[in-house]
Length: 624
Image 1 (tube, one colour):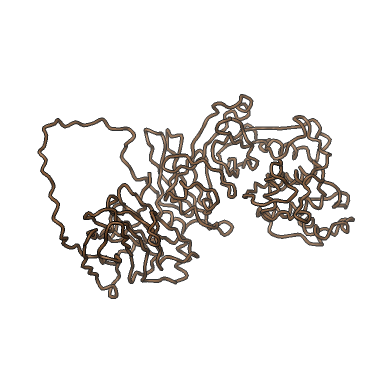
Image 2 (cartoon, helix red, strand yellow; image 1 turned 120 degrees about the vertical axis):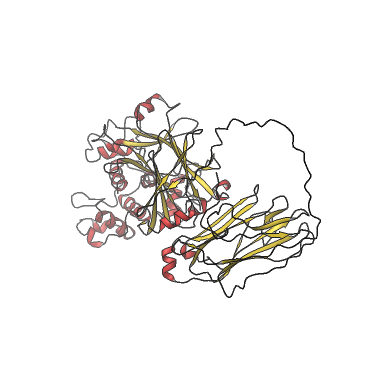
């Protein structure tokens, strides 16, 4: 259920508007002498079809860091429109307060057309940085909004305390310490006497019908505000409510609580990460956490929100919904829900059931108004963690894998990034750009021709079990066979879990080819620029030095390494002079990182890479 954000509050006033020929006597408290909030209209008379613009301003407000304004209107008489174009859309034109993008602006807007209440706000997310800057404008315009007149009828437009019950006479501001501001007054137009004849309500004689008390609808349970326990450092405890009808445990997180908690969030690699711990509820099989959409719709990565439940955890970056092809239902909704539940194996093949056995299965989805939104996040993946204690496989935990179970076909797709993390985590972690059902399984894949390659046997089996690499048949791997350039790129992209939308590709990489998407990702991300002339030669054999160059590039882009090797790192090899100039840094980087060791003081840069050599390298970077 969508809820109006409850900060603390901004003053409520009522304005009487006669939509045919109404005249206002506008009287305000002197804004120069005290702190106040002002509501003004651009005209005092309006006809059907005309636009009336409203402006909300502040004067002399110290340390302002955020606001919310709730405006009520009669949806049968007026509708909210774009102030610039008059088109039918709930557009707000921002003023000159709370406008510095450097401090992470969160715009808030929710227009309930049935009740006739529109909530408008803007909030700085990075309050500490904002406070440290000391750059605060104390007076100015918050925003402008407009209403189109639909019919000639007496009506009221003005601030409303609905959804904001704890403020100063029904209005809300807060400062850079996330504290409510209350030392201000509201300056509002006075009500006036209208010339229209007063409305007389008809007298209705009461009927002597018996009073009937209907049975309560179990779906209409009273709304209980969830409890938010005080957070400690980077985490905040959420206590959800169990809906006895649906069996869901739901909690809605208010923006004011999130903003305050972000001040205590820990920083990882320069990005704040807020942990929301959802308390376990006995008897539930699913958790639903409601969040403001805008908090996850930034145009860059400034923070992450980690939702932790007993069934699994989901880490969502701030730019997750700033992607192409995000459904309109998400972008147009002020709130959305993250849905995490346990699931079953109905319809799954028996052989797969045996490999999953009693290991956990969860579903993860995004909901808007209770509806699951089908969507693949092509360019930005989610990080997911499923609690699991590998008691039965302590010696072979590398064969613990993650499978995505397709919704309709009941087939499985390997999630190649799935890795088991031993104590103290005791969980399976993976990255995914797909929502739906995920299962933890045990899958030890082996081949009958890898025993003589003892230095690569385990690496081949682990990668094959996870779905990163395939055999040449069900029983053979052909480890001594040279590998093609396209096949290497596929394995490199899959092992690092790299994603992006492919808009261009090489001229010799044709749509429909099995490697098209993976080579396109490598081109888009800058891992490869090809061999010249916008060509990649996908089916040619790849040399060892080219394999090392592409690997080094991919590791930098994936954030696995930040420094590079130098000439001193390859000086020990007798054949160092055979390394091409373009490949020297890439080869040196992998030698420095211990990914490539060489053999008998040789690096063999121009030799072709074999499938076994490939597996050994991919295995190392997979676990970096």
